[in-house]
Length: 257
Ligand SMILES: Nc1ncnc2c1ncn2[C@@H]1O[C@H](COP(=O)(O)OP(=O)(O)OP(=O)(O)O)[C@@H](O)[C@H]1O
Ligand SMILES: [Mg+2]
Image (tube, rainbow, N blue to C red):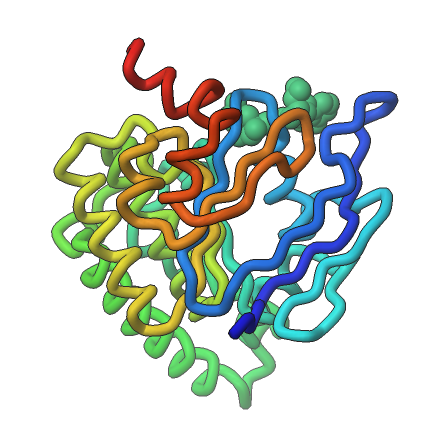
């Protein structure tokens, strides 16, 4: 039975005269891992940016857990349980891994109120709680030994794990990952997949942009393909593998690599 957690209806986004997202409608099943594929420039990252509030859609609607969130800003969507990582990780390079993760939760009272005396004890306790939680997610992502390292000095793959650690601070229900395995060595990619599957077993829903077809075919329940801003396929990995358009466009290309 269908039970979507994220519903996108007739979504359209233009960059000036260029239509990057063209009337996209899709539903992301609660508890699923959905792969979003498509050639370079298809609009995958732009779709993420519209869904997560970085860009306002020209037309269409976005519903998260039955609430219309069209036009919401990224911070409010994060508080509502929508987390996303970026294609190019952008940690604060000079801050430590731990400090980067501690920065993630928005709306901390300590950020809003600059120290009325009677609140200082409370703020301090909150900081301790945030530090503890941050260490938990860092350990979960296997980054414990790097907690005090400057985030700019860790590898590209470790930065991808750090990105996921940061959004886990918000305990998101829906997690959008933009090319999590790109440029990541096989060991760290394996760790990442293991963590995605573990979080999925805990009920988290994933929408993942990936060019790596083994990743898509091996770990996703559903595959969506985007071309020139339009959804050209939605189905199971098995259906994707017998779809001639996809075979010609992406899956067959692998054999020529
Ligand atoms: N800020 C922007 N201003 C103008 N055009 C943009 C902007 N961002 C993206 N585009 C264009 O929109 C189209 C979709 O880009 P997008 O980055 O969403 O593609 P993508 O599917 O994520 O590609 P890739 O696989 O290379 O990451 C491209 O033609 C791109 O040049
Ligand atoms: Mg992209």
